[in-house]
Image 1 (cartoon, rainbow, N blue to C red):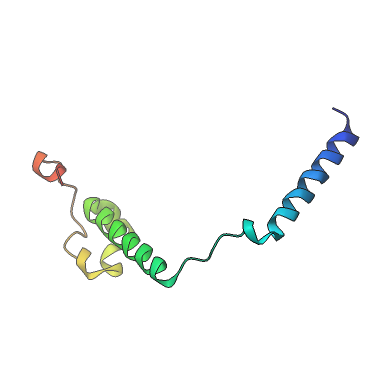
Image 2: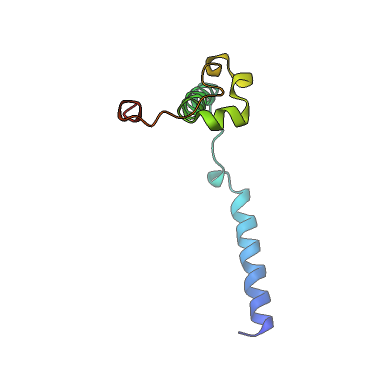
Length: 87
């Protein structure tokens, strides 16, 4: 491949991508406020549960400063007993 054809193909690709971005059909819809709130709630539960299950990480990140529900978790070690691993 010579330099000239490479430049022409690259410029054509960039121009095509730029044209696609201007089409309204290619633009994603903005999420509604309800969807944003639902995602934020899921993200919050996931983050808190992850820190609860990994107390060393919770302590490292200062989980008790993030949420009061993590105060008991802070400063403990992970429980590797079979009963604890089932949750």
